[in-house]
Length: 612
Image 1 (tube, rainbow, N blue to C red):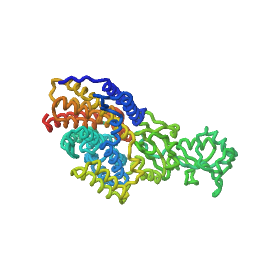
Image 2 (image 1 turned 45 degrees about the horizontal axis):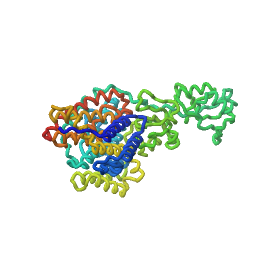
Image 3 (image 1 turned 120 degrees about the vertical axis):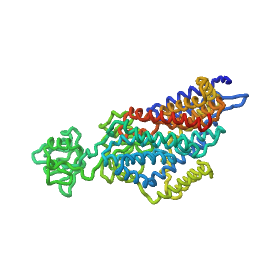
Image 4 (image 1 turned 135 degrees about the vertical axis):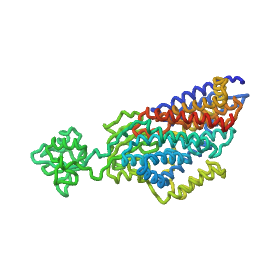
Protein backbone atom coordinates (compact mmCIF):
# COMPACT_ATOMS: atom_id res chain seq x y z
CA UNK A 1 0.00 0.00 0.00
CA UNK A 2 1.49 3.29 -1.10
CA UNK A 3 2.52 5.46 1.89
CA UNK A 4 0.97 8.92 2.13
CA UNK A 5 2.77 11.75 3.88
CA UNK A 6 0.54 14.57 5.15
CA UNK A 7 1.63 18.14 4.46
CA UNK A 8 1.31 21.23 6.66
CA UNK A 9 -2.11 22.16 5.28
CA UNK A 10 -3.41 18.64 5.85
CA UNK A 11 -2.17 18.58 9.45
CA UNK A 12 -3.74 22.01 10.08
CA UNK A 13 -7.07 20.81 8.67
CA UNK A 14 -6.95 17.68 10.84
CA UNK A 15 -6.27 19.79 13.95
CA UNK A 16 -9.12 22.13 13.00
CA UNK A 17 -11.42 19.12 12.53
CA UNK A 18 -10.57 17.85 16.02
CA UNK A 19 -11.22 21.32 17.44
CA UNK A 20 -14.56 21.44 15.58
CA UNK A 21 -15.65 18.07 16.94
CA UNK A 22 -14.75 19.26 20.44
CA UNK A 23 -16.70 22.52 20.06
CA UNK A 24 -19.73 20.66 18.71
CA UNK A 25 -19.96 18.78 22.02
CA UNK A 26 -19.96 21.97 24.15
CA UNK A 27 -23.48 22.68 25.38
CA UNK A 28 -22.66 26.25 26.45
CA UNK A 29 -21.59 27.28 22.93
CA UNK A 30 -24.38 27.56 20.32
CA UNK A 31 -23.86 25.12 17.46
CA UNK A 32 -24.13 27.87 14.86
CA UNK A 33 -21.46 29.93 16.64
CA UNK A 34 -19.02 27.00 16.69
CA UNK A 35 -19.73 26.31 13.03
CA UNK A 36 -19.18 29.92 12.00
CA UNK A 37 -15.90 30.10 13.95
CA UNK A 38 -14.54 26.93 12.29
CA UNK A 39 -15.67 28.04 8.82
CA UNK A 40 -14.05 31.45 9.34
CA UNK A 41 -10.74 29.91 10.45
CA UNK A 42 -10.77 27.50 7.51
CA UNK A 43 -11.50 30.18 4.89
CA UNK A 44 -9.09 32.72 6.40
CA UNK A 45 -6.33 30.12 6.72
CA UNK A 46 -6.52 29.00 3.10
CA UNK A 47 -6.70 32.66 1.99
CA UNK A 48 -3.61 33.73 3.92
CA UNK A 49 -1.74 30.49 3.18
CA UNK A 50 -2.89 29.34 -0.27
CA UNK A 51 -2.78 25.62 -0.98
CA UNK A 52 -1.06 25.38 -4.36
CA UNK A 53 0.31 22.56 -6.46
CA UNK A 54 2.32 23.19 -9.62
CA UNK A 55 1.81 26.92 -9.20
CA UNK A 56 -2.00 26.59 -9.19
CA UNK A 57 -4.25 27.13 -6.19
CA UNK A 58 -5.99 23.79 -5.53
CA UNK A 59 -8.23 24.83 -2.62
CA UNK A 60 -9.59 28.31 -1.97
CA UNK A 61 -12.43 30.10 -0.17
CA UNK A 62 -14.84 29.56 -3.08
CA UNK A 63 -14.53 25.80 -2.59
CA UNK A 64 -15.52 26.08 1.06
CA UNK A 65 -18.43 28.45 0.39
CA UNK A 66 -19.85 25.96 -2.10
CA UNK A 67 -21.61 24.19 0.75
CA UNK A 68 -24.23 26.97 0.88
CA UNK A 69 -25.31 25.94 -2.62
CA UNK A 70 -24.93 22.20 -2.12
CA UNK A 71 -27.86 20.27 -3.55
CA UNK A 72 -28.18 18.15 -0.43
CA UNK A 73 -28.45 21.26 1.77
CA UNK A 74 -31.10 22.75 -0.54
CA UNK A 75 -33.09 19.50 -0.35
CA UNK A 76 -32.78 19.38 3.44
CA UNK A 77 -34.00 22.98 3.88
CA UNK A 78 -36.91 22.56 1.47
CA UNK A 79 -38.00 19.28 3.06
CA UNK A 80 -37.98 20.97 6.48
CA UNK A 81 -40.49 23.48 5.14
CA UNK A 82 -42.61 20.87 3.35
CA UNK A 83 -42.73 18.79 6.53
CA UNK A 84 -43.85 21.85 8.47
CA UNK A 85 -46.98 21.98 6.28
CA UNK A 86 -47.94 18.46 7.39
CA UNK A 87 -47.50 19.55 10.98
CA UNK A 88 -49.48 22.80 10.78
CA UNK A 89 -52.38 21.36 8.78
CA UNK A 90 -52.86 18.40 11.11
CA UNK A 91 -52.51 16.06 8.13
CA UNK A 92 -51.46 13.17 10.37
CA UNK A 93 -54.44 13.48 12.74
CA UNK A 94 -56.31 10.39 11.44
CA UNK A 95 -53.32 8.20 12.26
CA UNK A 96 -52.91 9.89 15.62
CA UNK A 97 -56.58 9.26 16.43
CA UNK A 98 -56.26 5.56 15.55
CA UNK A 99 -53.17 5.22 17.74
CA UNK A 100 -54.92 7.06 20.57
CA UNK A 101 -57.94 4.72 20.45
CA UNK A 102 -55.70 1.64 20.31
CA UNK A 103 -54.06 2.58 23.61
CA UNK A 104 -57.40 2.51 25.41
CA UNK A 105 -58.20 -1.04 24.24
CA UNK A 106 -54.93 -3.01 24.01
CA UNK A 107 -51.81 -1.23 25.30
CA UNK A 108 -49.38 -4.03 24.29
CA UNK A 109 -50.51 -4.08 20.65
CA UNK A 110 -50.88 -0.30 20.72
CA UNK A 111 -47.20 0.03 21.61
CA UNK A 112 -46.27 -2.11 18.60
CA UNK A 113 -48.57 -0.05 16.37
CA UNK A 114 -47.03 3.16 17.71
CA UNK A 115 -43.48 1.93 17.07
CA UNK A 116 -44.26 0.74 13.54
CA UNK A 117 -46.24 3.87 12.67
CA UNK A 118 -43.49 6.12 13.99
CA UNK A 119 -40.82 4.21 12.06
CA UNK A 120 -42.76 4.24 8.76
CA UNK A 121 -43.60 7.95 9.01
CA UNK A 122 -39.97 8.77 9.81
CA UNK A 123 -38.91 7.19 6.52
CA UNK A 124 -40.60 10.06 4.66
CA UNK A 125 -40.28 13.08 6.93
CA UNK A 126 -38.17 14.46 9.73
CA UNK A 127 -38.83 12.53 12.92
CA UNK A 128 -39.03 15.60 15.18
CA UNK A 129 -42.63 16.55 14.22
CA UNK A 130 -43.60 12.87 14.47
CA UNK A 131 -42.30 12.69 18.04
CA UNK A 132 -44.03 16.02 18.75
CA UNK A 133 -47.26 14.51 17.36
CA UNK A 134 -47.09 11.26 19.34
CA UNK A 135 -45.88 12.58 22.70
CA UNK A 136 -49.16 14.22 23.79
CA UNK A 137 -51.06 11.09 22.69
CA UNK A 138 -48.86 8.89 24.89
CA UNK A 139 -49.14 11.32 27.81
CA UNK A 140 -52.94 11.34 27.48
CA UNK A 141 -53.13 7.55 27.18
CA UNK A 142 -50.90 7.24 30.25
CA UNK A 143 -53.17 9.49 32.32
CA UNK A 144 -56.27 7.53 31.28
CA UNK A 145 -54.86 3.99 31.45
CA UNK A 146 -52.65 4.50 34.52
CA UNK A 147 -49.58 2.94 32.89
CA UNK A 148 -46.15 4.60 33.26
CA UNK A 149 -45.47 6.82 30.27
CA UNK A 150 -41.73 6.24 30.75
CA UNK A 151 -42.19 2.66 29.53
CA UNK A 152 -43.26 3.75 26.06
CA UNK A 153 -41.92 7.25 25.40
CA UNK A 154 -38.27 6.27 24.96
CA UNK A 155 -38.98 3.22 22.73
CA UNK A 156 -41.19 5.42 20.54
CA UNK A 157 -38.46 8.05 20.13
CA UNK A 158 -35.80 5.46 19.24
CA UNK A 159 -38.17 3.73 16.77
CA UNK A 160 -38.47 6.96 14.77
CA UNK A 161 -34.66 7.13 14.51
CA UNK A 162 -34.57 3.54 13.23
CA UNK A 163 -37.25 4.29 10.64
CA UNK A 164 -35.45 7.43 9.54
CA UNK A 165 -32.53 5.35 8.28
CA UNK A 166 -34.51 3.59 5.59
CA UNK A 167 -34.85 6.13 2.76
CA UNK A 168 -32.88 8.93 1.17
CA UNK A 169 -35.21 11.57 2.67
CA UNK A 170 -35.66 9.96 6.11
CA UNK A 171 -33.16 12.29 7.77
CA UNK A 172 -30.97 15.22 6.80
CA UNK A 173 -28.00 12.93 7.50
CA UNK A 174 -29.14 10.52 4.77
CA UNK A 175 -29.50 13.33 2.23
CA UNK A 176 -26.10 14.68 3.18
CA UNK A 177 -24.28 11.37 2.78
CA UNK A 178 -25.98 10.64 -0.55
CA UNK A 179 -25.22 14.17 -1.78
CA UNK A 180 -21.53 14.01 -0.86
CA UNK A 181 -21.22 10.58 -2.45
CA UNK A 182 -22.76 11.89 -5.67
CA UNK A 183 -20.54 15.01 -5.65
CA UNK A 184 -17.45 12.78 -5.37
CA UNK A 185 -18.48 10.80 -8.43
CA UNK A 186 -19.60 7.70 -6.56
CA UNK A 187 -22.73 5.61 -7.08
CA UNK A 188 -25.95 7.64 -6.93
CA UNK A 189 -28.33 5.98 -4.50
CA UNK A 190 -32.05 5.79 -5.26
CA UNK A 191 -34.65 6.62 -2.62
CA UNK A 192 -35.40 3.03 -1.51
CA UNK A 193 -32.06 1.42 -2.33
CA UNK A 194 -31.20 0.36 1.21
CA UNK A 195 -34.71 -0.30 2.53
CA UNK A 196 -34.06 -4.06 2.64
CA UNK A 197 -31.10 -4.02 5.08
CA UNK A 198 -32.89 -1.50 7.30
CA UNK A 199 -36.09 -3.59 7.22
CA UNK A 200 -34.15 -6.70 8.27
CA UNK A 201 -31.96 -5.17 10.96
CA UNK A 202 -34.41 -2.46 12.01
CA UNK A 203 -37.19 -5.05 12.30
CA UNK A 204 -35.15 -6.87 14.94
CA UNK A 205 -34.52 -3.53 16.63
CA UNK A 206 -38.26 -2.73 16.75
CA UNK A 207 -39.04 -6.13 18.28
CA UNK A 208 -36.44 -5.36 20.96
CA UNK A 209 -38.02 -1.94 21.57
CA UNK A 210 -41.46 -3.55 21.81
CA UNK A 211 -40.82 -6.55 24.02
CA UNK A 212 -37.58 -5.90 25.91
CA UNK A 213 -36.89 -2.17 26.23
CA UNK A 214 -39.99 -1.32 28.37
CA UNK A 215 -38.86 -3.95 30.90
CA UNK A 216 -35.42 -2.33 31.17
CA UNK A 217 -36.75 1.10 32.12
CA UNK A 218 -37.62 1.75 35.77
CA UNK A 219 -40.91 3.53 36.41
CA UNK A 220 -40.03 7.18 36.06
CA UNK A 221 -42.22 10.02 37.19
CA UNK A 222 -42.28 12.83 34.66
CA UNK A 223 -40.62 15.96 36.07
CA UNK A 224 -43.93 17.69 36.72
CA UNK A 225 -46.49 14.91 36.99
CA UNK A 226 -48.93 16.64 39.37
CA UNK A 227 -52.16 17.11 37.40
CA UNK A 228 -53.93 19.36 39.91
CA UNK A 229 -53.66 23.16 39.61
CA UNK A 230 -51.14 24.66 42.00
CA UNK A 231 -52.22 28.30 41.93
CA UNK A 232 -55.76 29.21 43.00
CA UNK A 233 -57.75 32.39 42.43
CA UNK A 234 -59.65 33.52 45.53
CA UNK A 235 -61.01 36.52 47.43
CA UNK A 236 -59.82 37.89 50.77
CA UNK A 237 -62.58 39.92 52.46
CA UNK A 238 -61.26 42.60 54.81
CA UNK A 239 -62.89 42.17 58.25
CA UNK A 240 -63.57 44.93 60.73
CA UNK A 241 -60.90 44.92 63.41
CA UNK A 242 -58.55 42.74 61.37
CA UNK A 243 -54.98 43.76 60.57
CA UNK A 244 -55.90 45.04 57.09
CA UNK A 245 -58.70 47.28 58.41
CA UNK A 246 -57.59 50.89 57.85
CA UNK A 247 -54.15 49.91 56.59
CA UNK A 248 -52.66 51.11 53.32
CA UNK A 249 -52.00 48.65 50.52
CA UNK A 250 -48.24 49.07 51.01
CA UNK A 251 -48.58 48.13 54.71
CA UNK A 252 -50.61 45.02 53.80
CA UNK A 253 -48.03 43.93 51.24
CA UNK A 254 -45.20 44.55 53.70
CA UNK A 255 -46.99 42.38 56.29
CA UNK A 256 -46.98 39.56 53.70
CA UNK A 257 -43.26 40.16 52.98
CA UNK A 258 -44.14 41.38 49.50
CA UNK A 259 -45.26 37.91 48.38
CA UNK A 260 -49.01 38.55 48.21
CA UNK A 261 -50.22 38.84 44.60
CA UNK A 262 -53.29 41.09 44.37
CA UNK A 263 -54.97 41.29 40.97
CA UNK A 264 -57.60 43.89 41.85
CA UNK A 265 -59.40 45.54 44.78
CA UNK A 266 -63.22 45.73 44.77
CA UNK A 267 -65.10 48.06 47.16
CA UNK A 268 -68.66 47.84 45.86
CA UNK A 269 -70.37 45.94 43.07
CA UNK A 270 -69.34 48.61 40.57
CA UNK A 271 -66.31 50.26 42.20
CA UNK A 272 -62.78 48.91 41.75
CA UNK A 273 -59.87 50.75 43.37
CA UNK A 274 -56.54 51.47 41.72
CA UNK A 275 -53.75 49.41 43.26
CA UNK A 276 -51.89 52.44 44.60
CA UNK A 277 -49.56 51.95 47.58
CA UNK A 278 -51.39 54.69 49.51
CA UNK A 279 -54.94 53.37 49.10
CA UNK A 280 -56.60 52.65 52.46
CA UNK A 281 -58.47 49.37 52.87
CA UNK A 282 -61.88 49.30 54.56
CA UNK A 283 -64.05 46.53 56.03
CA UNK A 284 -65.87 44.74 53.21
CA UNK A 285 -63.19 45.37 50.60
CA UNK A 286 -62.42 42.33 48.48
CA UNK A 287 -58.83 41.54 47.50
CA UNK A 288 -58.68 39.27 44.45
CA UNK A 289 -55.59 37.15 44.95
CA UNK A 290 -53.74 34.18 43.46
CA UNK A 291 -51.50 31.70 45.25
CA UNK A 292 -51.22 28.16 46.58
CA UNK A 293 -53.87 26.96 49.11
CA UNK A 294 -51.31 26.96 51.93
CA UNK A 295 -50.22 30.53 51.26
CA UNK A 296 -53.78 31.79 50.87
CA UNK A 297 -54.79 30.34 54.27
CA UNK A 298 -51.63 31.87 55.73
CA UNK A 299 -52.55 35.33 54.37
CA UNK A 300 -56.10 34.91 55.70
CA UNK A 301 -54.74 34.50 59.22
CA UNK A 302 -52.00 37.09 58.81
CA UNK A 303 -54.32 39.87 57.61
CA UNK A 304 -57.32 38.97 59.73
CA UNK A 305 -59.42 38.53 56.58
CA UNK A 306 -61.89 35.90 55.39
CA UNK A 307 -60.99 33.66 52.45
CA UNK A 308 -63.64 32.84 49.84
CA UNK A 309 -63.55 30.98 46.54
CA UNK A 310 -63.47 33.30 43.56
CA UNK A 311 -67.13 32.59 42.65
CA UNK A 312 -68.59 31.73 46.06
CA UNK A 313 -68.84 34.63 48.51
CA UNK A 314 -71.35 32.93 50.80
CA UNK A 315 -69.24 30.05 52.14
CA UNK A 316 -65.80 30.83 53.60
CA UNK A 317 -63.03 28.39 52.70
CA UNK A 318 -62.69 25.64 55.30
CA UNK A 319 -62.39 21.85 55.41
CA UNK A 320 -65.94 21.40 54.14
CA UNK A 321 -65.56 24.11 51.46
CA UNK A 322 -62.05 23.72 50.02
CA UNK A 323 -60.52 26.01 47.46
CA UNK A 324 -61.57 25.31 43.87
CA UNK A 325 -59.64 26.13 40.74
CA UNK A 326 -62.57 26.51 38.40
CA UNK A 327 -61.66 26.30 34.72
CA UNK A 328 -57.96 26.07 35.55
CA UNK A 329 -55.59 23.34 34.42
CA UNK A 330 -51.90 22.60 34.20
CA UNK A 331 -49.88 21.94 31.09
CA UNK A 332 -46.25 21.20 30.38
CA UNK A 333 -44.62 23.15 27.57
CA UNK A 334 -41.48 21.54 26.12
CA UNK A 335 -39.06 24.04 24.64
CA UNK A 336 -38.08 22.95 21.12
CA UNK A 337 -35.65 24.44 18.64
CA UNK A 338 -37.39 27.16 16.69
CA UNK A 339 -40.07 27.84 19.31
CA UNK A 340 -40.52 31.43 20.60
CA UNK A 341 -38.98 30.38 23.94
CA UNK A 342 -35.81 28.75 22.58
CA UNK A 343 -32.70 30.51 23.94
CA UNK A 344 -34.89 33.30 25.39
CA UNK A 345 -36.23 34.16 28.81
CA UNK A 346 -39.94 34.29 29.62
CA UNK A 347 -39.61 38.02 30.20
CA UNK A 348 -38.05 38.57 26.77
CA UNK A 349 -40.76 36.46 25.13
CA UNK A 350 -43.50 38.28 27.13
CA UNK A 351 -44.95 34.85 27.83
CA UNK A 352 -47.59 35.67 30.45
CA UNK A 353 -49.06 38.68 28.65
CA UNK A 354 -48.95 37.00 25.23
CA UNK A 355 -50.53 33.68 26.19
CA UNK A 356 -52.46 34.39 29.41
CA UNK A 357 -50.65 31.58 31.25
CA UNK A 358 -48.85 31.65 34.56
CA UNK A 359 -45.42 29.91 34.67
CA UNK A 360 -45.00 27.85 37.84
CA UNK A 361 -41.75 25.94 37.48
CA UNK A 362 -39.03 24.93 35.05
CA UNK A 363 -37.37 21.54 34.71
CA UNK A 364 -33.93 21.86 33.13
CA UNK A 365 -33.33 19.09 30.58
CA UNK A 366 -29.55 19.08 30.83
CA UNK A 367 -29.55 19.15 34.61
CA UNK A 368 -32.51 16.88 35.47
CA UNK A 369 -32.03 17.20 39.22
CA UNK A 370 -32.45 20.97 39.15
CA UNK A 371 -35.97 22.31 39.18
CA UNK A 372 -36.07 26.09 39.45
CA UNK A 373 -39.02 27.59 41.31
CA UNK A 374 -37.73 31.12 42.00
CA UNK A 375 -37.93 33.97 39.52
CA UNK A 376 -38.59 32.04 36.34
CA UNK A 377 -38.88 35.05 34.09
CA UNK A 378 -35.14 35.65 33.79
CA UNK A 379 -34.04 32.07 33.07
CA UNK A 380 -32.67 31.51 29.55
CA UNK A 381 -34.50 28.43 28.27
CA UNK A 382 -32.88 25.73 26.11
CA UNK A 383 -34.18 22.94 23.91
CA UNK A 384 -35.65 20.17 26.05
CA UNK A 385 -36.49 22.33 29.07
CA UNK A 386 -40.01 21.77 30.40
CA UNK A 387 -42.07 24.73 31.58
CA UNK A 388 -45.02 24.05 33.87
CA UNK A 389 -47.81 26.54 33.25
CA UNK A 390 -51.30 27.08 34.59
CA UNK A 391 -54.25 28.81 33.00
CA UNK A 392 -57.72 28.37 31.60
CA UNK A 393 -58.41 25.47 29.27
CA UNK A 394 -59.07 28.03 26.53
CA UNK A 395 -55.64 29.61 27.00
CA UNK A 396 -53.93 26.21 26.90
CA UNK A 397 -55.93 25.18 23.84
CA UNK A 398 -54.95 28.43 22.13
CA UNK A 399 -51.28 27.73 22.90
CA UNK A 400 -51.61 24.26 21.34
CA UNK A 401 -53.43 25.53 18.27
CA UNK A 402 -50.81 28.23 17.82
CA UNK A 403 -48.51 25.42 16.68
CA UNK A 404 -45.26 27.07 17.78
CA UNK A 405 -44.77 25.13 21.04
CA UNK A 406 -45.04 21.52 22.15
CA UNK A 407 -47.78 21.36 24.80
CA UNK A 408 -48.28 18.26 26.95
CA UNK A 409 -51.59 18.41 28.80
CA UNK A 410 -52.89 14.89 28.29
CA UNK A 411 -55.31 15.89 25.54
CA UNK A 412 -55.25 14.21 22.16
CA UNK A 413 -56.96 16.86 20.07
CA UNK A 414 -54.78 17.98 17.19
CA UNK A 415 -55.07 20.79 14.67
CA UNK A 416 -57.40 19.94 11.82
CA UNK A 417 -58.02 22.06 8.74
CA UNK A 418 -59.43 21.58 5.29
CA UNK A 419 -55.86 21.81 3.92
CA UNK A 420 -54.79 18.46 5.41
CA UNK A 421 -55.65 16.33 2.36
CA UNK A 422 -53.93 18.81 0.05
CA UNK A 423 -50.78 18.69 2.17
CA UNK A 424 -50.75 14.87 2.10
CA UNK A 425 -51.28 14.86 -1.67
CA UNK A 426 -48.39 17.25 -2.22
CA UNK A 427 -46.12 15.19 0.04
CA UNK A 428 -47.10 12.04 -1.86
CA UNK A 429 -46.13 13.78 -5.11
CA UNK A 430 -42.73 14.79 -3.67
CA UNK A 431 -41.94 11.22 -2.62
CA UNK A 432 -43.32 9.56 -5.77
CA UNK A 433 -41.54 11.93 -8.18
CA UNK A 434 -38.20 11.25 -6.48
CA UNK A 435 -38.77 7.51 -6.02
CA UNK A 436 -39.73 6.98 -9.69
CA UNK A 437 -36.74 8.96 -10.93
CA UNK A 438 -38.89 11.64 -12.57
CA UNK A 439 -36.85 14.35 -10.86
CA UNK A 440 -34.20 14.61 -8.10
CA UNK A 441 -35.47 14.95 -4.55
CA UNK A 442 -34.17 18.53 -4.38
CA UNK A 443 -36.32 19.47 -7.40
CA UNK A 444 -39.45 17.54 -6.38
CA UNK A 445 -39.23 19.00 -2.86
CA UNK A 446 -38.87 22.51 -4.27
CA UNK A 447 -41.92 21.98 -6.51
CA UNK A 448 -43.75 20.58 -3.47
CA UNK A 449 -42.89 23.66 -1.42
CA UNK A 450 -44.29 25.87 -4.19
CA UNK A 451 -47.49 23.82 -4.23
CA UNK A 452 -47.80 23.98 -0.42
CA UNK A 453 -47.54 27.78 -0.55
CA UNK A 454 -49.82 28.15 -3.59
CA UNK A 455 -52.58 25.96 -2.12
CA UNK A 456 -52.54 27.65 1.29
CA UNK A 457 -51.16 24.64 3.16
CA UNK A 458 -48.21 26.70 4.35
CA UNK A 459 -47.52 30.37 4.93
CA UNK A 460 -44.17 32.05 4.44
CA UNK A 461 -43.89 32.73 8.16
CA UNK A 462 -44.23 29.04 9.03
CA UNK A 463 -41.95 28.09 6.13
CA UNK A 464 -39.21 30.43 7.33
CA UNK A 465 -39.70 29.27 10.92
CA UNK A 466 -39.12 25.67 9.87
CA UNK A 467 -35.56 26.43 8.79
CA UNK A 468 -32.90 25.66 11.38
CA UNK A 469 -29.86 27.96 11.31
CA UNK A 470 -27.76 25.52 13.43
CA UNK A 471 -28.49 22.70 10.95
CA UNK A 472 -27.57 24.88 7.95
CA UNK A 473 -24.34 26.15 9.52
CA UNK A 474 -23.10 22.78 10.77
CA UNK A 475 -23.76 21.16 7.37
CA UNK A 476 -21.90 23.92 5.50
CA UNK A 477 -18.99 23.78 7.95
CA UNK A 478 -18.81 19.98 7.90
CA UNK A 479 -18.91 19.98 4.08
CA UNK A 480 -16.05 22.50 4.04
CA UNK A 481 -13.98 20.39 6.45
CA UNK A 482 -14.69 17.26 4.39
CA UNK A 483 -13.57 19.02 1.22
CA UNK A 484 -10.40 20.23 2.95
CA UNK A 485 -9.65 16.71 4.22
CA UNK A 486 -10.04 15.33 0.71
CA UNK A 487 -8.21 18.13 -1.10
CA UNK A 488 -5.16 18.05 1.16
CA UNK A 489 -4.93 14.27 1.06
CA UNK A 490 -5.59 13.99 4.79
CA UNK A 491 -8.68 11.81 4.23
CA UNK A 492 -6.54 9.35 2.29
CA UNK A 493 -3.89 9.44 5.04
CA UNK A 494 -6.52 8.68 7.71
CA UNK A 495 -7.90 5.89 5.54
CA UNK A 496 -4.46 4.34 5.05
CA UNK A 497 -3.78 4.59 8.79
CA UNK A 498 -7.12 2.95 9.57
CA UNK A 499 -6.53 0.13 7.09
CA UNK A 500 -2.95 -0.40 8.34
CA UNK A 501 -4.22 -0.57 11.92
CA UNK A 502 -6.66 -3.27 10.81
CA UNK A 503 -4.11 -5.03 8.61
CA UNK A 504 -4.70 -8.74 8.34
CA UNK A 505 -8.44 -8.37 8.92
CA UNK A 506 -10.84 -9.19 6.08
CA UNK A 507 -12.81 -6.31 4.52
CA UNK A 508 -16.08 -7.27 6.33
CA UNK A 509 -14.39 -6.84 9.71
CA UNK A 510 -12.84 -3.53 8.65
CA UNK A 511 -16.30 -2.41 7.56
CA UNK A 512 -17.71 -3.46 10.94
CA UNK A 513 -14.98 -1.59 12.81
CA UNK A 514 -15.60 1.55 10.75
CA UNK A 515 -19.35 1.31 11.35
CA UNK A 516 -18.71 1.09 15.11
CA UNK A 517 -16.38 4.11 14.93
CA UNK A 518 -19.06 6.20 13.19
CA UNK A 519 -21.67 5.05 15.74
CA UNK A 520 -19.51 6.15 18.66
CA UNK A 521 -18.76 9.49 16.99
CA UNK A 522 -22.42 10.32 16.30
CA UNK A 523 -23.33 9.81 19.96
CA UNK A 524 -20.74 12.44 20.86
CA UNK A 525 -21.05 15.05 18.10
CA UNK A 526 -23.74 16.06 15.61
CA UNK A 527 -25.03 13.41 13.19
CA UNK A 528 -24.47 15.71 10.23
CA UNK A 529 -20.93 16.57 11.27
CA UNK A 530 -20.06 12.90 11.66
CA UNK A 531 -21.63 12.12 8.27
CA UNK A 532 -19.99 14.94 6.31
CA UNK A 533 -16.53 14.26 7.72
CA UNK A 534 -16.88 10.46 7.64
CA UNK A 535 -18.12 10.06 4.04
CA UNK A 536 -14.89 11.11 2.24
CA UNK A 537 -12.88 8.98 4.66
CA UNK A 538 -15.14 5.98 3.94
CA UNK A 539 -14.62 6.39 0.20
CA UNK A 540 -10.85 6.59 0.72
CA UNK A 541 -10.88 3.41 2.84
CA UNK A 542 -12.77 1.55 0.10
CA UNK A 543 -10.25 2.77 -2.48
CA UNK A 544 -7.34 1.63 -0.31
CA UNK A 545 -8.93 -1.82 0.05
CA UNK A 546 -9.83 -1.97 -3.65
CA UNK A 547 -13.48 -2.80 -2.92
CA UNK A 548 -16.84 -1.20 -3.67
CA UNK A 549 -17.38 2.07 -1.82
CA UNK A 550 -21.15 1.56 -1.42
CA UNK A 551 -21.12 -0.55 1.78
CA UNK A 552 -18.66 1.87 3.41
CA UNK A 553 -20.81 4.85 2.44
CA UNK A 554 -23.83 3.08 3.95
CA UNK A 555 -21.75 2.34 7.05
CA UNK A 556 -21.37 6.11 7.47
CA UNK A 557 -25.08 6.65 6.87
CA UNK A 558 -26.23 3.96 9.31
CA UNK A 559 -23.58 4.73 11.92
CA UNK A 560 -24.29 8.47 11.86
CA UNK A 561 -28.00 7.76 12.47
CA UNK A 562 -27.50 5.44 15.45
CA UNK A 563 -27.92 8.12 18.13
CA UNK A 564 -29.47 5.75 20.65
CA UNK A 565 -27.18 5.74 23.66
CA UNK A 566 -27.19 9.36 24.85
CA UNK A 567 -29.97 11.92 25.26
CA UNK A 568 -27.85 14.55 23.51
CA UNK A 569 -27.15 12.55 20.35
CA UNK A 570 -30.35 13.73 18.67
CA UNK A 571 -32.84 16.46 19.56
CA UNK A 572 -35.81 14.06 19.75
CA UNK A 573 -33.94 12.19 22.48
CA UNK A 574 -33.84 15.44 24.44
CA UNK A 575 -37.59 15.98 24.00
CA UNK A 576 -38.32 12.40 25.08
CA UNK A 577 -35.99 12.71 28.06
CA UNK A 578 -37.87 15.77 29.32
CA UNK A 579 -41.39 14.45 28.80
CA UNK A 580 -40.73 10.98 30.22
CA UNK A 581 -38.67 12.02 33.21
CA UNK A 582 -35.74 9.83 32.10
CA UNK A 583 -32.23 9.85 33.47
CA UNK A 584 -29.04 9.63 31.43
CA UNK A 585 -28.61 6.03 32.59
CA UNK A 586 -31.97 5.06 31.02
CA UNK A 587 -30.64 5.94 27.56
CA UNK A 588 -27.54 3.85 28.22
CA UNK A 589 -29.65 0.97 29.54
CA UNK A 590 -31.93 0.91 26.48
CA UNK A 591 -29.71 2.47 23.83
CA UNK A 592 -26.56 0.39 24.18
CA UNK A 593 -28.30 -2.99 23.53
CA UNK A 594 -30.14 -1.43 20.56
CA UNK A 595 -26.85 -0.04 19.23
CA UNK A 596 -25.25 -3.49 19.52
CA UNK A 597 -28.21 -5.13 17.75
CA UNK A 598 -28.07 -2.65 14.88
CA UNK A 599 -24.25 -2.73 14.63
CA UNK A 600 -24.05 -6.53 14.55
CA UNK A 601 -26.99 -6.70 12.14
CA UNK A 602 -25.52 -4.26 9.63
CA UNK A 603 -22.07 -5.85 10.01
CA UNK A 604 -23.60 -9.15 8.81
CA UNK A 605 -26.06 -7.85 6.21
CA UNK A 606 -23.94 -5.27 4.36
CA UNK A 607 -21.05 -7.66 3.43
CA UNK A 608 -23.59 -10.22 2.16
CA UNK A 609 -25.42 -7.67 0.04
CA UNK A 610 -22.25 -6.25 -1.52
CA UNK A 611 -20.14 -9.44 -1.73
CA UNK A 612 -17.31 -8.17 0.47
